[in-house]
Image (cartoon, rainbow, N blue to C red; front, side, top):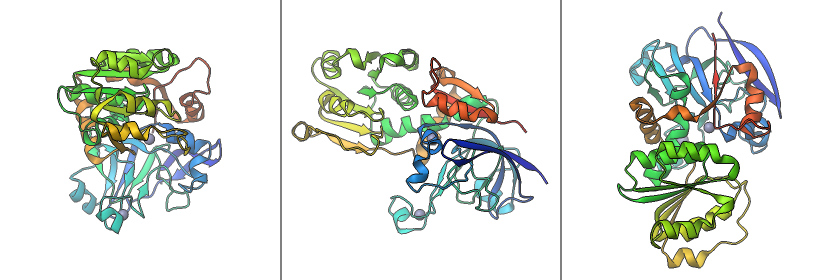
Length: 365
Ligand SMILES: [Zn+2]
Ligand SMILES: [Zn+2]
């Protein structure tokens, strides 16, 4: 019997490295995946600190990891037919598999019984449901995307952060060719939004970041940003007025976590009749002061964004496969699974002088 090597999160800030049996056969209608790598995002930090478990999303022990890339180890006939895949094919895995048949699913809302990779208990079957393990089971309703064999694991893993950029800027923000966009925040999601805007033919792409994010703003420039602003040193609304001859931008995308000033800046910087997409989570706190009158007088459309769609993932994979942009600039760390704890702390900014952008766990077999 094959064994999977996995980092199991057993309590807040506590990993246990285990060898777990890999089932001999894939789940009925599903597949077994040999995991090549797993990307990390802010929810990995939340999960590591115990925040998601407290919120009722997955309980310990659990194998985390929901930004998954791998190769089909085995699949049954039903899986092969549905996905049109064969053993050895390289795929990106959508981290969230809605059931498709519950009433909320039927109207496009949040599934009552969604399958969340990286958040399913170790006691659920084999327990191999997270990308922090080097083998995984793939449930039948999962969306799998073929991805080019000759991309590096790190480049291929960008399908996840880049998907959000396409969703937020294009699907939700509905940016048109020749329009201007202000992107608040220069992290993974902010830079993904810059790329999506560039790819869609935006005229002006203005991105903000903190002083300590200077290296990220430099990457934004290389991804196609026309202007970058240091948030602590600039009145963003004034700067936008100057850059757009007083008109304001067509679209603002807020990707900043835990900050309300960017929301106010967005309302001030957007043009009359423009759109604002809010994608930066604010730690479940309410905004102390909200300029409602300005929002309604300017007839602004404000849209909440969570995660990314099937379409967004497809666009992200296309962009990475086209190799027209220096996407590798996103990679700051590639780590083996034994170093996952330090990697999470690095992503969280807890390690001095080691700024992180995109971190990839690279598995061995
Ligand atoms: Zn994620
Ligand atoms: Zn459902």
